[in-house]
Length: 141
Image (cartoon, rainbow, N blue to C red; front, side, top):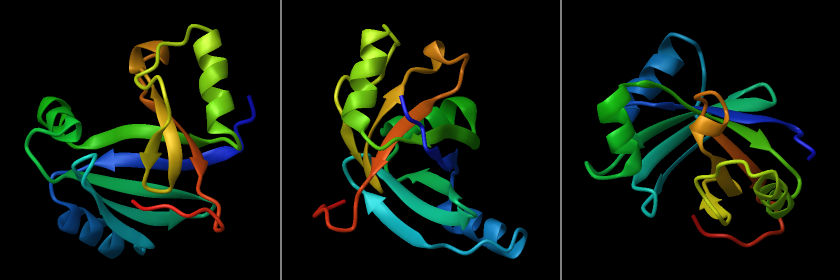
């Protein structure tokens, strides 16, 4: 498997606007992208950090997976996203190794296609594998 970099580290927050202000005013970070993913029931903001980014995630419904995560664990680290050049191959490789996965197929992410490895397979860390969209790819988020 060819992991090329950490794409982002995601932090779940109650209030996206408040978190953006904190990261901007206290850490000097700027938002590069902000979007809503209705199928995931979340609002997201990306703040570049060198070759990677911080992804702030906030639920937009009380029933989403992220809302349940937030209610159970509170604000903080949600997942680490590893970038790969071929997400389908990575998924097949991990499945062949009997790695416990949350997704058995790739799903749309804010910046590409990805899947999640179950935290019980990685000592408590939720890991996302992501193949970013290429500029020539057509996609809707």
